[in-house]
Amino acid sequence: MRRMPAEWEKQRAVWIAWPHECKSKGYAMKLEGTYLRLVELMQTGQIVQIVVPSRRYREHIEQQFKFYGIEDKNISFILTMTDDVWVRDYGPTFVIDNSQLKVIKWNFNGYGGRYEFLYDNHAGNVIAKKALSEHEKMNISYPGIVLEGGNIETNGQGIIMLCKSAVLNPGRNPGITQKYAESLLKEYLGALRIIWLTGMVTENVEKTGWSDDTDTHVDTIVRFVDLNRVVAVWTDDKSDPAYELFQNAYYELKNQGLDVVKLPTVKAGFYSHSNIGASGSIAANNQALRTDASYANFVITNDKIIVPVYGKREDDIAKGILREQFPCREVVGLFAGHLAENGGEFHCLTQQEPAVS
Image (tube, rainbow, N blue to C red; front, side, top):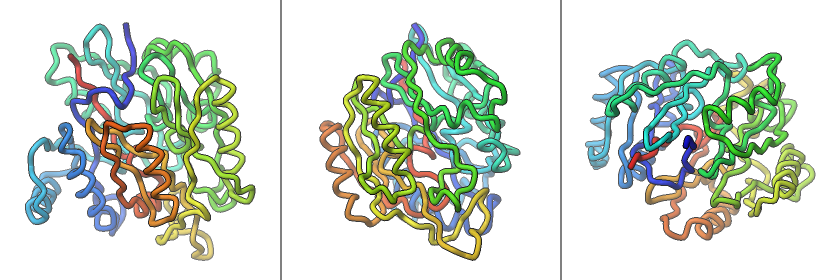
């Protein structure tokens, strides 16, 4: 039987793509401190597979590890060029089928053509082949539709949750029907039940006031924490630009019979200090832009819950809620403001590879 394991199940590895200056000058410098600490937190529980664009970058990272006293255990490097760091979105999705690891490689088109994607599809294939290199068969499937991994959430027992706004989107899959998309989710992920959230199409992030130009990935608003329980971002503030998005998601989840635990949003928002606007450009009139900073974008490792925090009062509330949901894991907050300025947090830039017994 084929299924996509839940993130809290045993993992062999977690994949990340290191930021590099080929993206834009200062990009790696801005994010590297966050990455170093993230690797240090993740390596205690499983292998950390780091995608780097060149041997020079590998040597640089190894020097950084040595300088900051980060052990080199459970670290592996893979050389291939990437456009950006969001490996969950352009990398493969892993499933287990009759005790065998299989890989699904969806198409990636830069979030409906918003960003360049010269290398990311190839990088996803490199990751898929490397992950399967220790197994007897190269089980890679290509469903042929555009689907980012950040828009796939599962409880590990056949429920797949995703947002319509990003999948049934003319910029990604023109003319696709919900019925056809569901047939692929059943075939390739072993979906037994599919929950569609409405999400929100973001045509202009400055106008919307909510800089999620993925057209809403489920992992920014809702996450499974148990078989029938989710945490969902919530606000009572009607002036919040994402108020309607959060309200819709909450009641859609309740109508599906799920146990919904409210997770706070970042009150009054977290604003970009870099003035990054749509498609990576500088925001109009050099005005600060509210990011899509979210506590829901935590990453689960074998021994930790790594929670994005923003130096806000809600940080401790969010960590407390997640500590209640995952009592057997250490809950650690890590500042994610620099990442949020560029469109995501820890779940977006990681992809777990399940262990196969």
